Image (cartoon, rainbow, N blue to C red; front, side, top):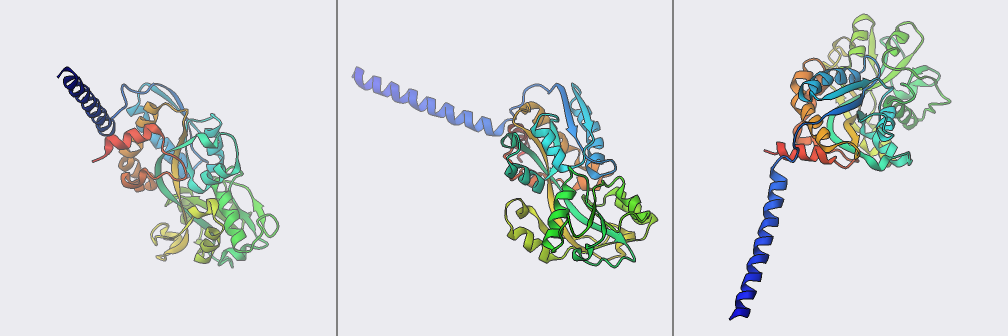
Length: 331
């Protein structure tokens, strides 16, 4: 009899333990895990002056300061995606924005600390824009041979995609053109002054610098044919993240004159590393989502951040702090 009671007691204990584990797992999924509020300092690497990264970062800084009053926030300009990723990976910055193709290229390169990079939010898409004077004879990428072409700064995502597009079009970016490494802060005026025949830009729509250029100088956007995308994607690796897209007819009214333009799109990610405190990352991610509409009134691309797709940060694993936020935001 005592033996039977002992077995019964052990069974009750095991059942109780199992129930506790199940309850714990349910609470782990349902309840927000962040306790307290973040404090300390963070550096956010943005982008080139007048580019979408910088404008978005400046507006986000105000929202972060309001939501995280104990955190000191420092913005740092950059040349673009490639430099941004290197800064975060090596600890010079805590958060940044970068195009997914540049992230994938960094991971494949074997550069320092790629394995420590983590995703927080899939943001908006960048659209590649090849800008020429209205009267230019450049009608497709292959027409760039022999031309002076702005290709973005050394550490930019623009340079990465521009080189790849030209190569896909049969244009050697180091031999067949006169490349000018410059940013969106200077390329428009260089086009006006006749120092450039064309320039590449990759950014959210509309990009302020391109819009302002179109209002004072007659420009045209060169279509990027779908065959280029096929060639890029066929190469595999980081080029699989490019896709064919249509620039809406009203993205740049003066330049497009009611005509949609075929182009290439690539997603942007908000990234950090596994070194970043989960509480800080959770709060940062929440602010990005919550401030979407407010910031989007000034930076249109921010309106395109979508909670339903924000969690998809391939090729990076999701940071634990961001994961906590998405669990808490789960309807």
